[in-house]
Image (cartoon, rainbow over all chains, first blue to last red; front, side, top):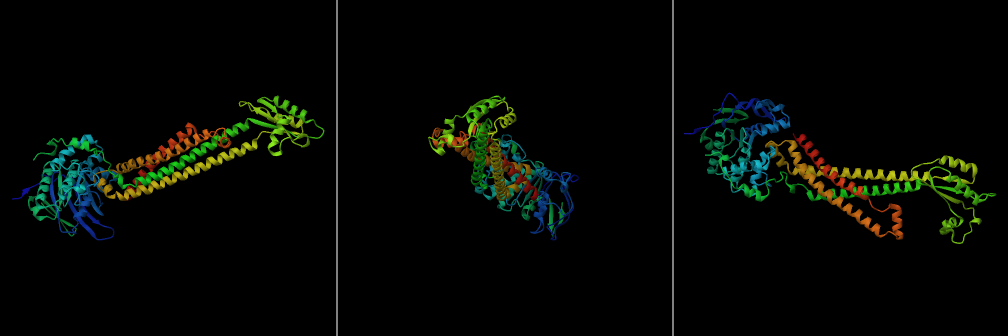
Length: 232
Length: 317
């Protein structure tokens, strides 16, 4: 029996999409009439076939793109009306795990994970303990000083996840976080996301892995041909 | 499972020992640092040399002007039917009567012959040539005196005498010094423009090389100002290094030139150099100007990089 995840409050979406459409340039709409919300503390999978628009939707969610039409509200702010500093403020409340990790190769694992706190203006002394503890928690306690090029795929993935959650974001977006690891590690990483969700972070995991989704009873946002079908 | 903050960890000590806790976000190797330092050093060197040269010429011109302005000359030309010795004595007497005159020295016949000796040879008899006689008038520094009155009195009482206050020479000197200063300012402006352009290209190159890093910084919530400040720190360091190398080399050049000038004192070439450039020393104000240039070059480098980064990010956004 799959475990039910997410203790969301459905009435208060921290992210709301209303009739959102997206097209690149003069091309066809890749996302059409998306209307959904992501509640605090919720857990959901975002899935769909290749080319369905998952990456585009994630880019809208982490404020890398603006919609061509419709309304996106995040933390009660209309994202279209925000200036660049306003967007930076919102991004600090969002954790992102990229499929290709995007760790900075010249910084150690510790420095990569500490980056969001450093950007937020905190001193190294104030976050040193926090970062090392998180790295131990994700199993990288012995790899603090290692540079990303010498980390394995799984280690990079965990470092990327640690960087995404170190600033305790209110929502975590993960793009194929188990795409580059073996099934055992994929299970372990998913348990990590579940623990984060239990600690209060809303989680959106974009994945193709049906077997992984079947492990947990969670909301599924399924994209097909640019339209969304929601399975609560 | 416990939360991560519950775990105590002694590994922080290892981090401290690693000494990388404050590593730069923009990798130093991604910026053409050595080349930029070299260019900034060359620019600072040229700028500092120009500044020193302008100060040297302006200072010497000022000294020449002051020396020349403190002297006047009365020329008494031989005229038929007049006693030139009496005319010289009369001219000296008129000059002494003017307020602001510190000293009056009529050149004797022998002294006048001595002045012409390099051109006409020794043993010359002035009586056979219509050579004017000179009365040197040295002025007190504080009072300009009534020299229009002296000129009028000379014209009235000694029609064969005239007063030369060297005004034309001073004007030419002033114009020359002004031209040198303007040329120096133009060279400095060009050096500054070249430095700004070089830093602009270097910053654009660094931004292109670090585009993935800039993207990641944006995604984790860094503002444009934060990213620009990181680039600015890098370029400030590079600018100050380049400025210190170039400015230091220029200071060394002036110090060595001053030492050589001191060694040549008393020799013929030393006298020539001394006549043209004074002591060939730019003085403490000159060295201070070069130090200010070094700091200014660093600041301009940092400001340029910040401006370029901010504008580029605004355009991308």
